[in-house]
Length: 125
Image (cartoon, rainbow, N blue to C red; front, side, top):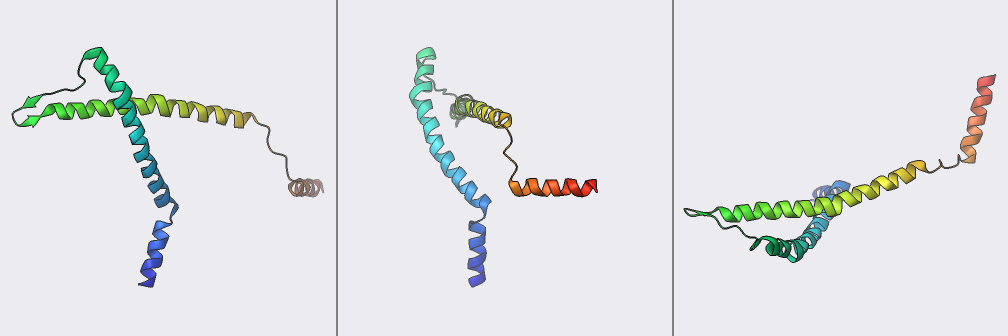
């Protein structure tokens, strides 16, 4: 029983499991933000431009309109995430990498410099 608990601890404390759990929690919280933005801004805007933004299509016992609405909501949320979050963050990361690449290299530590000089002297002999 003790080894089972130890094995479970190792599993839980693995970096991937913790990262995944954090990602899921942030994703759930971020999903609420995107849903609020969609419901509060995009849907009323679409309603003002083109009427009621819901599709109703009944075929026999099936409501195909629900599926179409879900697909449209997904596309709206995906475009909000892509254009308002991912593209700006990618631009910021590219700027940071460019700035980091342009920075001068850090100074060589004294011990490494000394070892380099010793190596060079040994090569000369």
